[in-house]
Length: 375
Picture (tube, rainbow, N blue to C red):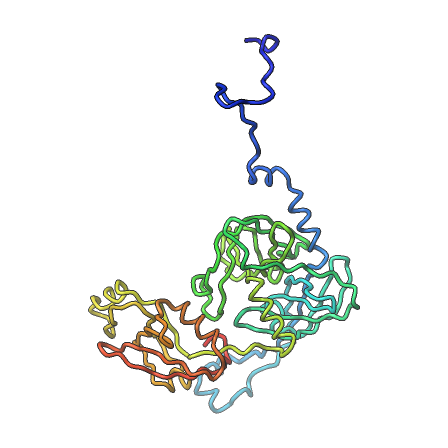
């Protein structure tokens, strides 16, 4: 039928009409993609509170005569044949955001760690010398203070506990030296442990996102669609292609308060290097004729190494032990054990149920303060 001969569509559809006419509505995803204003609004809400952090560090080097590489000669001559070289300046770049009108800036620890000079530059071009208030390597967080008066923009902080997989994620920062850069993606997954990411010296559960996070983004905010900070971007994997990681903001809030007050955060530890054990993994090990020892075929946490002079060593924990319980709570994976210890108090006594070969033992371990994040 030609258009001129067609009857006009009815203004409303009744039950039983054939065919029923239903007005089609855009899906939320289509509406969001078709209208980028939510990204603009989110960035405008927080943009002026995002800062660039430039760091400088001076290192000294010595040139050593090749024959002094021999331990025999070094024993007798020491550094007599080494030559002092001119100091070398190392420069770094990162991001951060203002969390308090007094001039507190939150960023990554690796952005400012060991820096001799920290310069904070605001979006309006003003620059200030930054003083590092505190650093926590275990959670890769740092607080920097600038003296810029009281009229500073502050980033609105959201709640990472409210974040869901599939939510919009907006990364803001200065990647690769390109200031004021915004990338858009979604939250890919939650509670991605530092062990899964491949950084065993950290104690974190990351927000994973496909919003581009590159060197220079570190310390900048990850926003939700309302412009609230839900995480702190951290470029920790050089081989990460298409995925990035952010420290949940709820974790950062608690750490930032301690860093501002005390300059550091005390983390309890046991002093073991461990892996998750399942009966299947134990069977594979036990069937290998080259295996150095037999492992109990149970669910738990296998101790791979005990740090010397650590609480675990003093309690009698040995390599090859399988930790089954702590204070009566079943332990089935390494992340669970790490989180349990992290949430205890320094000096707290923990009762461990350990299987050693075919025997089970009860051991008492008193936590101590972690001094080196790599242990």
